[in-house]
Every structure is written in structure tokens, then in C-alpha cells.
Image 1 (tube, rainbow, N blue to C red):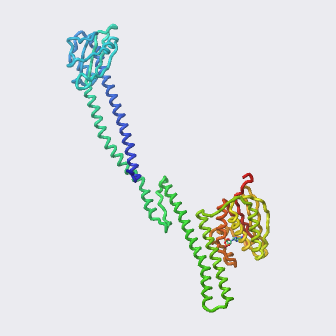
Image 2 (image 1 turned 120 degrees about the vertical axis):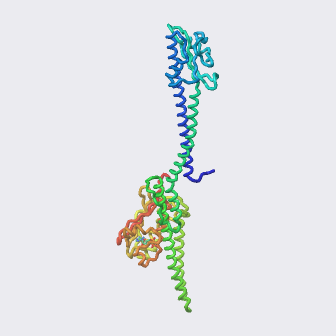
Length: 470
Ligand code: ADP
């Protein structure tokens, strides 16, 4: 079974760890209690035996029961019913006239041997009665000679009983402690995870249509806060991207609508009456121009949407950039001549790059085309190619209308045209620079612009240069 709730899993882990801790703690306590109980019993038994042994040394009369009771009372605080006492001679035979135990205490050979050497022995015997009996066998030594052995014993019934009672109490406490721990753990987990539930509810309300909603940050400065912050940042980025897409679609529709409206209007007017072949020709030529504009626009849009998803179909290979620049120069020269603008060549170095020559041709031509378009008659456009560190740099500088700093920040956005450009005679959809920038990026490069209104602009394309060794 897979537990789907983190809260339940946390509670179970918490309870399991706590139960294990309790068990370890209880085992340790029980062990400690057993040890100290046996130590206590041995200490008291030793006391009783020593007292009786020293009495035996100083008296000639046999012991009475009351003497033994008295000795036990001194060391145990009471005289137990199931106590044992035997007195033996050095050969291990019971000394008569002594108040012996109800059952005779055994004397093993090893114990007798140790006693003959003057050593005391502590043993636990299990075969005397119902319960184990702890026995001390102590020699009475006089002038270096063992004259008698004292044996004192105590049934361990009460000790076992105390231990069992303790065990029962521990067993009773354990489930209560586990229940309390589990309950506490559950409450804790619920409390800790409540903000997550809250976030999930809010997140469910944020839809694709409206990404303006944000998650509430719990404010504890903890992981959940960081999670909410990260998700909010992600929502912000998605929101911006969605707005851009919407703007793009709106602009694209608008740009397509204008030539279509013109086309429709012209054709409708032409159809209203009978026209001469020359007039039909004029209308059809104009319609073709509008269709060209539409098809350029659609091509540009397709290109941009492909570049957005990284689907530029490129065939990169090692090329000499100067060759591409020269091809563009030759093509643009005619255009420049028509506009009355001088197209010049500046520095022209040999720089090899890895790229698709057709795309790069398009990129440079776009910029040169713009430079000519936005430069008044008698102006000058200069094309240069040189190496700049790890880059191949192509500069397209003009003496045209120039751009303000604000305009420079906007010009690479699709459909953006400066006011001056929109009001001028030059038609354009504002896609050229977006496409140029996408081509540069697809080659691992970028386009920089430096411009001042009224005194011209320099557009610099930077592409990664291949080093001569490669
Ligand atoms: P367009 O089709 O309008 O030329 P672009 O994306 O190529 O579209 O250029 C966007 C805008 O940037 C132009 O409308 C124009 O306002 C401005 N621009 C581009 N190149 C130049 C330049 N060399 N000098 C001045 N303005 C320029």
C-alpha cells in the first residue's frame, strides 16, 4: 500500500522512531533495575553473613532463630520468611544444634574448596525451591585456620516479583506513550503541512487564461516560504510569456489585416464598374504587391515561431564570412544606388566561422537593408568585417536617422517600429530585426547597437570565430 499523504507518512515515521526509542529506554531501565537489585541483595546478604560469622567466632553457644532474624533485620530492614541459614564444620558437615534451614542448603565441591582457601562464594541456585535462592558461603577463619562455614541464603521471590511488576508497568506505559506520540506527531504534521494545502487550493484557482493570481507566502522564512516564492516567480515568468504571446498574436493579426483590407478594397472598387485593360493591370499589380507583403509577413512569422521553439532548420559548415559579406554588398549596392545612398566597404578581414551561409546572408542583408532604408539621400552606409577576440564582428554603420536609447531597447521586439519609421514612406512590419537577432542567437552570437538620433547608427553582429588551429 502506498501512502499518498506526507502527513500520514511523517506521523508513522515519527511514531515508529519514538516507539523504538521508548523500547530502548525501557530495556535500559529494566536492565539497570535488575542489576542494582542484585547488587543490593548481595550487599545485604554479605552483611548478614559477616555479622553472623563474627558472632560465631566470639560465642560458644549455638545460634537461636532470633539471632538470625536480628541479623537479617539489621541489613534488610525486615526478616524474610524464606531465608536460609546453615553452619558447617570445615569438612562441610552440618554442625548440630544450629537452627538450620527448613531445606538443607547444598555445598558444592568448588564452593567447599574455595571456602577451605578462605574465600567467600556467592551463588544462585534454582533447584532448592519454587524460586531461585541466592546463597553466600563464607568461611570463619581463626588464627589462619578455617574453623567453620556459614551459609546464608535468601529466596529471590520478592526480587523477581518486583522485577515483574516493573515490567508490567513498562508494558502498560508503552502503548499510552506511543498513542500520545502518534497523536502529537499527527497534529504537528498537519500544522506544518497546512500551508501546503492552502497553496494547492490557490494554485488550482490559477488558470491558463488568468495567470495574475499569486500564492500566499506563509511568512515563516522557511522552505515553504521559499517554495511559494519560487512558484510565484515562475508564475510571473509564465504570465509575462503569455502576455507576450497574446501581444504577438494581436500584432500579427493586425499586420495581416492591413494589407488584406487594402487588397479587398482595391479589388472591390475595380469590380464596381467596367475598367480598361490598363486599369485592370494597375489594380492587379497593386494586388500582387499586397500579396507579396502578406507572404513576406507570413514567412517572417513562421520563421520567428520556429526560432522560438529552437526549430531553425540550419545547415552549418565552415565558411569564410568575408565571402557572405561581399555577396550582400553586391546585392545591396543596387538598392543603395536607387536610394541615392553610398554603400562603402570598410575593413575586410578573412574570418572563418561555422554557420549556415544562407541564413547569415539573410541576417546581414536585413541590417544593410535597414541601414539604407533609414538613411536619407546622400548618406553613407559602411560594411566592415574584422576579428575581435573570440568573435567575428560585422559592423553596419550608417549616417541615417539614428535611434534614441529607449528605441534601441525596443527595436528587437517583433512588430516594433519607431514613430519616425512608421510615419515615413518605408513600409515594414517590424519583424526584420527580430529575425536577424534570432539568426545570430542560433549561431551562438548576438547583435549590438550603438546609435544617436540624427547622426546615424552602428549595428554590430558578433559571431563565434573558429580559431585557426581548428
Ligand atoms: P522594419 O521592417 O520596420 O524595418 P525591423 O525589425 O527591421 O523592422 O526594424 C525595427 C525598427 O527599428 C524599424 O522600424 C526602425 O524604426 C528601426 N531601425 C532599424 N534599423 C535602423 C537603422 N539603421 N537606423 C534607424 N532606425 C532603424
